[in-house]
Length: 423
Image 1 (cartoon, one colour):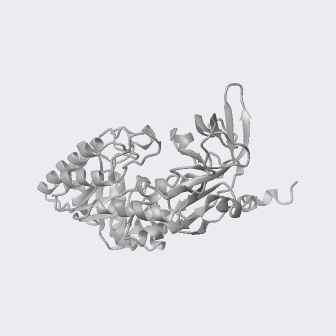
Image 2: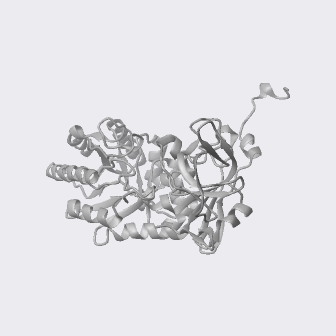
Image 3: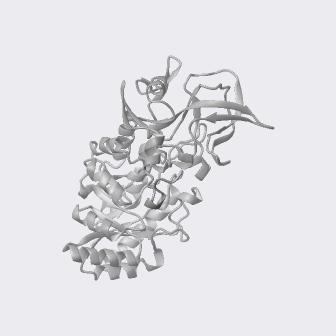
């Protein structure tokens, strides 16, 4: 469920007419719904009532400070993958004891900063990383709480670029070596072995891959406890999908997901850590765009928007589907369009062969389900400045990231002294 709906023939974000945002802020722009963020977090958290569970929002999905603060106020923790995301979470009011540090390439300075802020745990992804973290912890005079991320070699049945739990993926420690590396970790003076971590991918639309991975984790936890390790946390990652395409079966609900987890690992006497990102943010945001031109090609019609692949990369990168709807409600004639942007790439395309209400230049459209992996993946390709982000609450809105100007973007460049005063 989201809070974008037609009222009196115009699409609104909660109580705000999207025409108003287009007129006052301009397009393209990301528009988010506070009510949707809050509802999604509460629904997910409710699915784990009765369990010792820490919900750590995956900051990579949408890292705007206003979003993080909204979730922090609801008691969310954070799953971070860089020192930048860690600093964002801390600044938003998420305490270190509710922060998990994941990712395959942690630097020494990132480890040290995280230790200084007493984070909940590190999810360690390799032997060399484990050794470096041990040395950083010893030099800091503390012990680093760790879970090892285990690669269970389970096919998540999702897009190849967001599958993370197969043996061929770069993530995690091979299943066959897990016990040996836990033994090594347990012998390190700067390491406190506290848990097991698994994450098999993103946008999963079935529970069975989760169940298979979690069953293997359960087996490993029992073996590690037999080996003498005090495993008291089980990090199950994130990855539950959201509905992107109208008319397609919906992914499992958070309540079904929570019930499955309770069935598989709920009696393990361990804190469960969950790391939803897309599930919280995806349908809480849209990309608002204006039609620049329509164009008749040799065998197709093009709808050219002022938004482009540098603003929303997912369709170009993942062949991802996003519903596209007019801001002015329409029920009449439809035309089959390729919806594209102005970037000088054939891949700058939001959809192909999509029947949409017949549209003219100047019309506004909303690209739905753009709250996750939209603004955070944006770039300035073609010297197109980053676009604004807007947060709506009831009948108010705030600009939570201003539109970058072309001059600001250009002024980030520095010209070396030997080019000074050259034409």
